[in-house]
Image 1: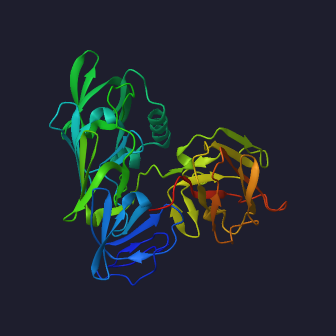
Image 2: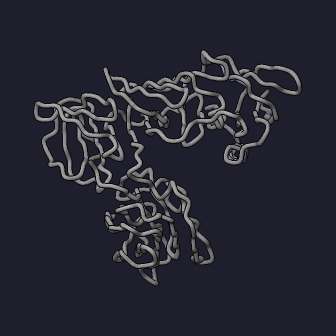
Image 3: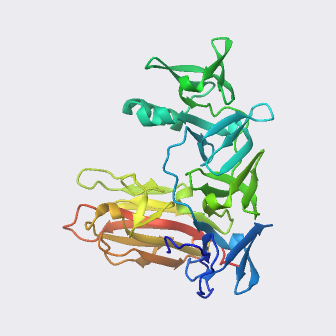
Length: 411
């Protein structure tokens, strides 16, 4: 994969020939559903009505967005300055926020990030809020307590941590609104407003009636936000789209990635395995990690970060129900870069209990390998990682990067 290319536009798609890069920004890569091999270059004209338009060799060509998995912009570097607020939304949404304001409708708010803006976002679609001050300077045990509360939120009430003169206290209350000035709370039978200078974090109860809808394309600006957008349109340098009641606008030059939502494929890390079998390694049981390597870090193979995948150790077997409706299984397999030069892992894949793939032993020094397997008709898919060497117990951090099931070939 190309990591950085200035003033060009590149699209990765199956069966399309490589051509010279165009001379105009932004750089764009689009990875095809089936294999992600091959390249086509051109200038991005826009996205509208489910189709992506490129200018190639002096003429415009259209591609259905549903043919691709990702649109990756080689544009600005990731935003490294922590935002004043980090907001977690329901269903994988994340907002790096520089300004919070009340929305036009009751129970909504407007958010402004670095190069993007969201309006009419339902308060009930959010899970948690934390200030930069708390995430940067808060005691480690309190940050861990916030993480646990965010992952297991209270039922029937919200939680807010307030700070006064270096003293912190958690209150059970109802968060009624968020404005530029602070947070409106129903606390102990009275209405109060807590200034943002006094707020450390907020965790909202999941019992609120409204929540963010499922699905939508995952749009990622350079500040690290994750926005869900349906029916995106890219026109006049702005990507726009809706997410239920909310509406988003993102400056095109701040885009980093659009993960395309399509019924044609599903990532295994978004599914719940039917069965997981584990054996201890040196008396330690290594649980599989979704969208992380087995140590809890980002999946990284040969210097490339993969946002989707499954990280395991050896002596791990995971079985997924596929229902017989998929044609292919694709993944990039290898030992995570965290292992350095260590590790020796054999990757195996079974369809309905029948072995359809077995890799050679792969270690930290080996390049990752793409696999593309025909699984048509299979109702169960099993991923197995085994030791590749009896004398290499360390560093067996096995990655199934971008592991996915595909229903149909690209269009």
